[in-house]
Length: 261
Image (cartoon, rainbow, N blue to C red; front, side, top):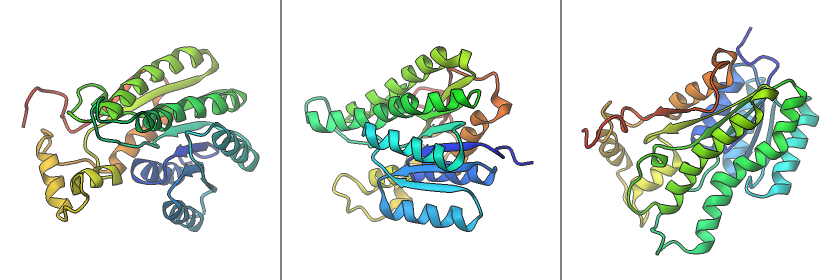
């Protein structure tokens, strides 16, 4: 028997960590409800999951919009009969200080990175309660602990995710719902690729940039989305049955020391 047979999982974000997580949970037997705004990524994930025989409903949805999240949850429950797992991976990563970041950009970061977690909880937790409980994993970041310069909005959202994770865990523990977060360091994702290409988007040697980023981590490399997906899968599984309200760093040792190279 696979570790997620009979489970239904909602995953937000269809690239990077979200993509790897959808693949991992599907490989474990879960039916997948995936939500994302990248049409090409959505189509590729749908084709991949369907070809593997996994139950899959891939929805083009902006998870910062209440009606779209409500409808996605409802469609998934109608299709698969319930909801057991939620993984919140969708994110935007604006650069800027509090002075240089305009209010629209600030609000967008809050709405996508934090608001989407509220929305999947708001609409998803009642469905999970009907199934007798479940697991939620929120993708935060080491930037929620110690941030770089010029990422005021992004770092703020990741710190907020840590707090919201604890609040959800406390509020819904007696309903059998566990809520945890993971805080990755530098992971090979489209967001990191954008950083590697530089602010003007023209830097070509992405792998050289990844190597530089990796050197900041004591383990000596950047992480892979599949590695984060494995940690998420563990936290979603019955093996993590006594884990809730916590954050799990997966950062190659980045935050273990000060100025460590």
